[in-house]
Length: 92
View 1 (cartoon, rainbow, N blue to C red):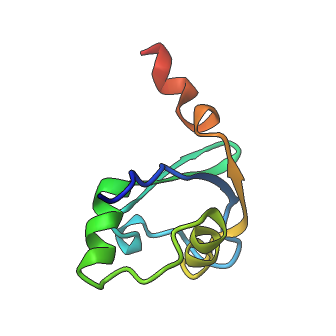
View 2 (cartoon, one colour):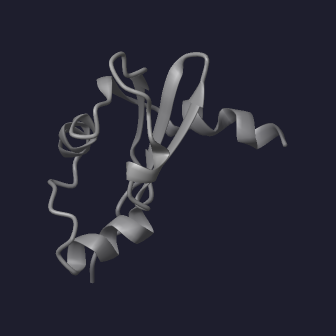
């Protein structure tokens, strides 16, 4: 039996040289923006399937995800508590 994959959450800074295109981000990564930059969370129920069929090849650790996110041009990617990312949604 496979263990449940956790949701990983990150913050990153704005890209300086190019405009961010959300269309380039795969379905297993959720990206939102606010005045602090990017709020990023993984979507494990999609990422697990993508890994199983071979279209996502990463080490499923925070460090592995940080390396993966940097490929999209995110800078200063840091893992944060998911509570920090989702706290605004808890009040709606």
